[in-house]
Image (cartoon, rainbow, N blue to C red; front, side):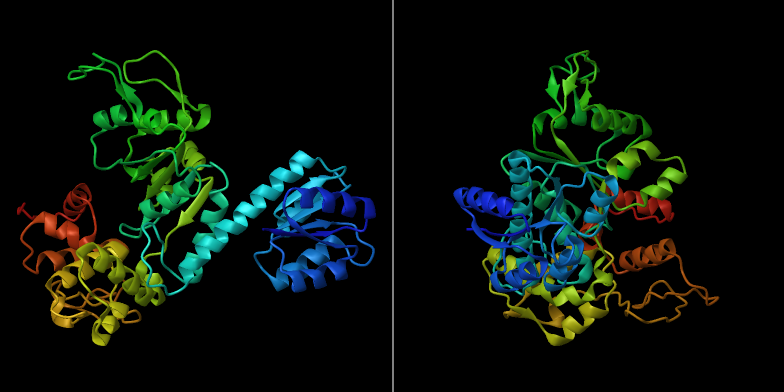
Length: 462
């Protein structure tokens, strides 16, 4: 049963809210002044606070600050007789969850309460991800760093509505996992349909997204529903959105603006009810600047943005991730693996992880398959190209065990130069197929092909 604290100096409002909320099944605490309200908040630890701005001792904004000092995640619905924009803005900037004018509209208040309590419930679920738990649950996101905590909070916020979300992060950071968690906490009973924009040629991608009518092109032997229709009121996850052609970008923009489209070769207008979550490992602003991505589409997608930090930027999460992944692997392989040796963990903490969490999981799976004991030893892993967190070492060859931050002239390498060196190092280690390279780096085959072409690397093995 949720507990709500009402802070208002108006006796009639306190009594009416107390009666209504009690009838709705809430436990209610009431206070007639700001100081009394803060003290009750500390004693009772309510799930939600309904706070009047004008109080006899201190104003509601000061009370809000005091409550936030006690609990930075406190949910406060502020109420006032003032209808001016300045007061509203001040309340929301101050961290209020919502703002409602007097005289109170019970329906409006009830909606605000439901949203606030759902947010509280979501944050409590996500906070469990910050503890080192050995319990394996599909869809968990693991991390205790500040960046990950911010992501958890953002997920809680966007899960309360159906706004468009843009997820940005390197390959292997878990962009689709984030999208699935948002979907599952918003529309879990509706379909989640993912499509990789880089893995399908443009002509087929248009049909995949929007569907087609019979005879609309060669091979169209019947009508086909596209992903946006099949998703219903669920989620369409567009991975690698930066790879989408300009022509398709215009059609996607129409969906986001007008909530409608036509099938390829069709005339009927179809309404879109699905939510769009897009993801990219590229800098869309840079693509906009070079004319490769529509600026208007970028702003439509970037309503709420989530940046997933690469694993090298949250090394403190690596032990927690290893623990989580080993538990997951044990369940999947029906094999007991409980930890990695200390020297392996030290190497993990120094390594650059260009393939991020996906690369870490792939390494642990391989090691678990060949391991002879519950502890994964150094001999169970392939050699890692070491990139110490704070090292600046030079190298005259791309085929050493150390990738340098600097070139032979002593100048810092660009990210592209670092990526090329690492890719050449991986290929020089006798890997036999492109599939093995993709597994090691945690990337798709089309992505590997683009990188080989980008750096003029010849690797004929299939």
